[in-house]
Image (cartoon, rainbow, N blue to C red; front, side):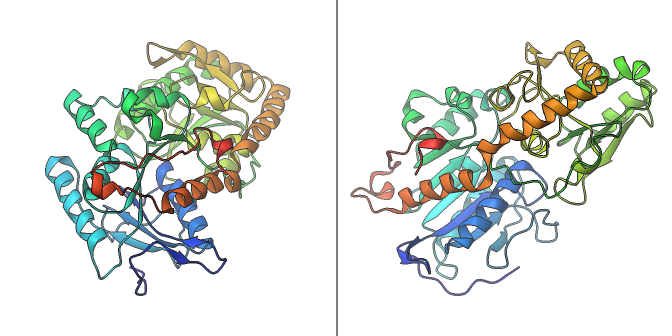
Length: 407
């Protein structure tokens, strides 16, 4: 683990560029290949570049690989605590102990990612002066949580000084008491480092954790329906997860071995872009699908389900991609098959949608989105007359609700 030098506990320190320097702790479940981890890596690097002290705290084990790159000056902390009820309690205790430790210095701003980690962070900072930003990265309505959990989570969120949503639509998932602390900031979409050289190949690409949420079972079903009419084309699915065995069985039952390939984890972030001709997102629900944004930024033609939330705000139908309905929360297999076959057989349409996709992603440029995050952090660092600790709740800040309105 990289070591950090001794630091003061105050957030009011001047950085080298004369701005207010902060001690920021990002908190997440692990440092693997997920979308939240990717955003944290970008945020941590940007905050560090602006002179802030940054550490990233994860609950995975120190021997697990770190997928995304972090600058040498960003401290990585691996607390190694599991999930489940006992694990959640252990995480709360471990995080509180770490954040309160005089040895490490106390973070003035804690930024947590993912629903369960937001709950852990909110309880860990109770009674402390730390500002708390909770980042919701998925669709809370579709995560199948117990009603008691939802009530506890709503209470925990009252400790947050700001709750960052990726899309405007997700705001409806939060009750009236939380609306005035919601901020919409989409994910930053980096300029692709890998060019899609496979536009003339015959590869349909899909990316994500192999879970039910991502709808790969429906995508395989749709591809099976058109496979005889598109000889030479194959479907590559990148990612790892619990549904791999079920997908392998589905592929074998459809006789699609060699036509549908489970590629596993890409060795490098966004490495899957290079050979793709078409990108497909078949999710049942989303927050803000990073893989879709990355494919669009690279100029790939895309097909996506119009699930809650994200694709409908990212894609203009027929101009920057193709949206396929979800019916009662399930991807429309016939619609996916029709869209796939139409795009496979129309090279001109692929080129047109690819150009439109790249243009559409310009509004999510990393520098603009990361600037919105840093503007939010700066507002939270300003002194206030009433502290969160003294009143046992959140400081309600006049933060903008639209990304473009943040200074």
